[in-house]
Image (cartoon, rainbow, N blue to C red; front, side):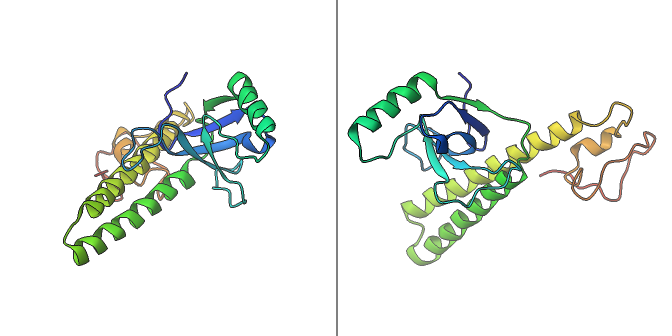
Length: 192
């Protein structure tokens, strides 16, 4: 089985309830900062990579059934253990997922600053700071993987100057230079 990491876009197939099938991204995984769960928390994605706003847009992996009928719950659990599969998808646009983690990092950082200012840096504040740092690292990893995927997908007939490969503006504000003689660029913005 693949290792599931926070920020990965995954596809679930073969679930008992049709609403559990589809594209999701891993919001939290075991071992994450400020997460004590033994399962992954998932948020639903639309086919274009945007985060879904529909009512039942959260689930867990392994799938958990939330129904009142005890028999149906047992049947669904057994079905999911036998048939439900999850796989990481790398062909889906991850920009919106990275934006989600940037927003979560900002929220946690604001909470950290509030508690630091008003309550003299208690344990809760330090947990929020660790969470903000974790979400920032997840967003950076997603953006780096997306950029690496974009560089790999560049047409073989269109070679990009090696100086462009470490630039944070590549494929955002700039499509990269094909001129191989240049060694400096006024638009170059190194990653931190």
